Image 1 (cartoon, rainbow, N blue to C red):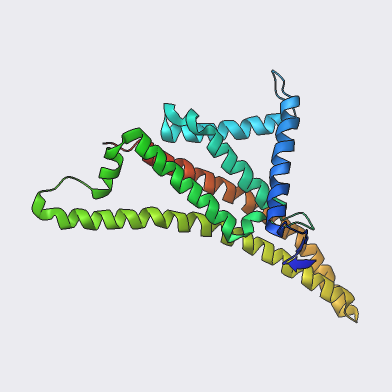
Image 2: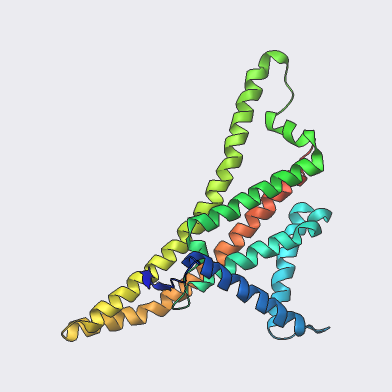
Length: 242
């Protein structure tokens, strides 16, 4: 086993550690969904109430940004939010690491989001969606301006992949790294000789719950940020005027 930075990486033949964390993440989501499904009531109670409020909040954001077509994209937005939130929080459990602290995972999510909203834009508007990358229609002698607008639009759209992936990765990786450093300091001071080392280990131990609370807050905020940006990008694509 290897430590990274706090969680244990389990070396199972044929299953990389990050893949194992992805399996655990989806297992948690699927099991939670089945439990909630079996406890559906006309009047929600307990955890079902919390999930209903959460889902309605995401639905409301999508409806306000996209309009009547938003219901077609509910599964995407809910899937993104639940996966990112569960993956973020998983790293707070001793012995596990957040899959979203891996750049390949966040980059994959960003690429999926990018391809999805581009596809929806083309599906909704056809050639008109591609035409808007050129900017307003100008006289033929101003074509260089259209080309410049095209280049800027392409760069800005691909920059969304970088910003989506790096924002999530950096925030969650820093959370994992900070928890790992605290755990390492606690063990170092705990086994160190003298009263001063024991005092420092106690201080680190007391600090840890506050870092965990901060980690929970960062995990929730980043899940909402990623989902809101996905909603905004889809809205800009499907509502883009001809």
